Figure 1 (cartoon, rainbow, N blue to C red):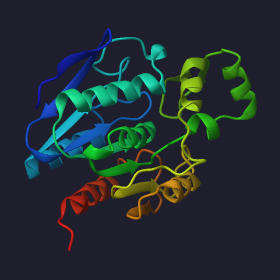
Figure 2 (figure 1 turned 180 degrees about the vertical axis):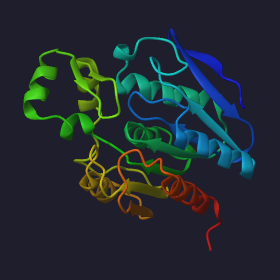
Figure 3 (figure 1 turned 90 degrees about the vertical axis):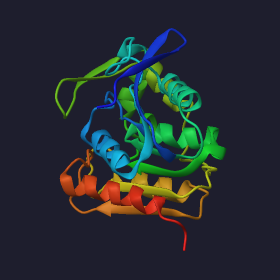
Figure 4 (figure 1 turned 30 degrees about the vertical axis):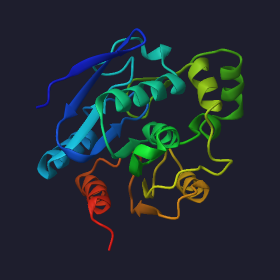
Length: 245
């Protein structure tokens, strides 16, 4: 097991695990209120170990092994942490893999570090979910400064602060061309109840890259953590490592 290490972004201690190895470095970006110890992250780390690849995974501030309060996090803050982790801890080309909200952050990472991106993988990617993911009455409550606390379908409480929502609204992508040119693979569950399949289609169409593939997993939900779904993710990453014919 790779030990947890830490570095600071501002006054926020960020926990990470960095596996040494060859390029390209795999970088995993978790979803909203998720961390680097989930099934997909662990499977990708084991894949990197088998292939002798470097891999970076980390926790956003307020989650997992990182310091701070979750309610203080915003999309812009977590994007800042992702860019800092990449800049300080990795070298050379990257394959950035983002799950759910992490897929949204991955798109912004690609826009900000285009010279580093060998490829991008979105797993149930959720760009712009602060826009399409809330009914109008909830948007009004958030825009007035209220914090929403709702039951999560995965257990516990789902917290959305007005600051997080406002930050997301400043980082919307889907109503314009997304100027990313590297190979991109999007995996999405056919029956994803959290991120509609239409969002994956909108993302695919908005991306400027000519090398974009959307893989729809029959019967798949949002988490895409069943063994055959994780296998599809690993096969997708493996395909990006193969030399072009």
